Image (tube, rainbow, N blue to C red; front, top):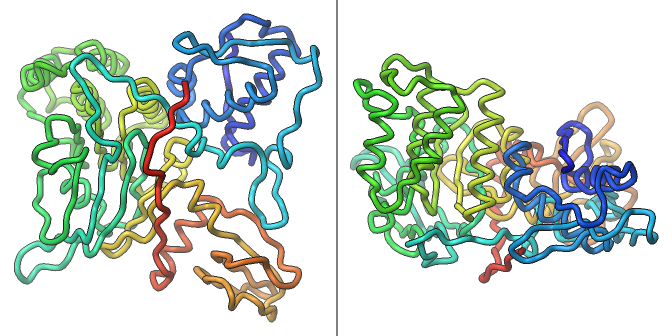
Length: 425
C-alpha cells in the first residue's frame, strides 16, 4: 500500500501531492490494478491533514480513470498509468490564472462541497441537525460594569467540519467555546448547538478547556473509569485507552505527577472516549511537543474522517491548523471578522502588488494597503477585473488572517455555507 509524504513547505497544494505520489507509485509498479488505496482515516492518521483533502485527491484520480470508488469497500486502482493518456486537469493543477486564483479541479484544495466526508452513525447515535453551531447577535458581558467579551456575533458552522477559531489574546475565543459547551450563559443573542440549546446538547458535546482541568488525586486509569461512569451509553474504552497508551502513560500515575503535555493527552482521551458529535478544543496543542502534536492531530483528523465528528479548535498559530481545518472563524475584539469555508474566504481575496504610486484599487474592497520603498502591496476583495498591470496572487491563510487583524476597520466577511450536505462515498 502506498504511503503518502506531505511536504508543507513545497508550495504545492496537498491534494496535488497525493495525486502526484499515487501516479508515481503506478509508474514504479508499487500500485497495480485491483490494489486498494489507503482510506481517508489511514491517510489522515499518518499525516494530520484534513480528510476532505484526501477525498479531493481521490476524486481527481477517479476523474482521470486511474481509480474507482467502491461503496463500502474503499478506493481501488482501476488501471496502470500507461494504459491510456491521463485527462489533464482543467487549467493545470495548482496553476494560477489571470485573477491570481489557483486552478485545478474542484472548488478548492480542501475539497469543497462536493467532497464532504460521510457521517457514519454509531449504534444509538442519530444526527439531528446539519448545523453544529449557529449564532445570531451573540454577546457576552461579564458583570454589570464588565467589558464585553463578545458582541453581535453571527455565524453558522455546518456539521462535519473541522473549524479553526483564530484570534489574538483576549479576542473572545475561549468565551465563545465556553458558551458552546454550555458552561456560560449568553448575555444577548442566540446560540444553538447541534440544533438545540447548549445545555440540552451537553451530552453530545466534548470540551477540553485551555487549562485542562482534571482531578489531581486520581490516577490515569481512575480518570478513564470516571469517564466511562459519566458516559455509560457513549463511552468508547478502546479509543480512550489507545490515546493514553500512545503517550505512553502509566495507568497508575496520578494526574498531579503528569507533565502539561501528558495531562493534555488524558484530557483528549476523556473527550474522544465520549464519542462526541461536536468536539470543542481550546488551545489543545499548546503543551505538546512537535511529535505529540502531530500524532494527536492525526488522531483528531481520523475521528473526523470516520465518524463525521465536528471539531472546533482555537489556536494562536495559524500554520498548525492550515492543513487540518476546512472552516475558519476569525475573532477580533469580541467580533467575528471572518467566517466560512477557508477555500471560499481565500478565493474572495487577492494579494496585488505594483509601483508605490500606482492607483486603481478604489473599485475594490481594500483590506490592507502597504507601501514599502517603491512597491505597493495590498490585500483586496475584488469587485471585478483589475485595472492596469497589477501583479496578482492568491493569499495564504496566514496572510489573510494577519491582514484582517492588523486592519480592524476592514469590513467583516462571512460566506454562506450550503444548506445541505453532499457526501463522498
